[in-house]
Image 1: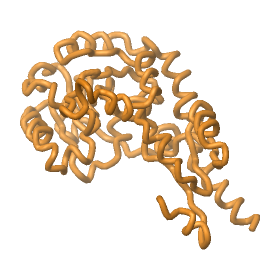
Image 2: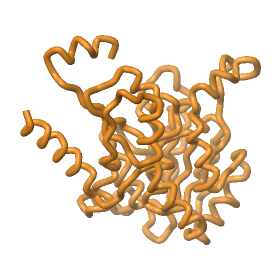
Image 3: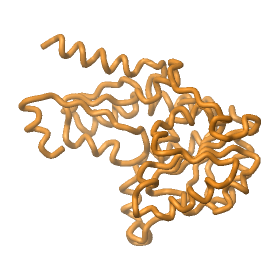
Length: 277
């Protein structure tokens, strides 16, 4: 993006982030200002306007979630995934770094045999040679009949969020997305950090993660280690409405409008700007 000013001599630019997560890059990416950036909710809008007063930020809501709210999302049947429709379904959607994956037991599928488990890795976890340990665990868990490991063609997380009862995740924007569907979330607040992010270098981890991660404390049930998960998951299944009001309030801040019309607002803005030339 360092040459964006040159681009602006011949064209206009639009920025939409692929996630609404707690990583600092959500804000840093606007250091090079685009013609317009579409953002999600008044909290993010205010922070960006304060940080970049010369920017053009428009609160449209999060377009990725539109299909969940306007009924156009692909419908998934658990039976088609080889899973049991009579069992509650867990969706494990970790990010690639910092991630909880390597702190999960190889017996994950057995420990949660009373549940269906859908594992939706981040793309980098699935392909990067840096994450061979992740891939080995995925393939091991995949052998169990209560586990569905998504494929490379299952690029869209949304249909799996819709069919899941509870999500397990770590430092991923998927937590805010699942909260927008007003379902219970278990925050796996235990990470495998590289040595260069530990001890005297812990500032690097803090720099990577934005203060928005504090909202996780409000909308999730926090697990400090793998051993705590079973009890927390069971409680989430039993009382799915716990934190419901809080999830809805935080969603308004961090995802914005959830009326299924974010994409329409984006298109209307662009069309109206083109018409006003």
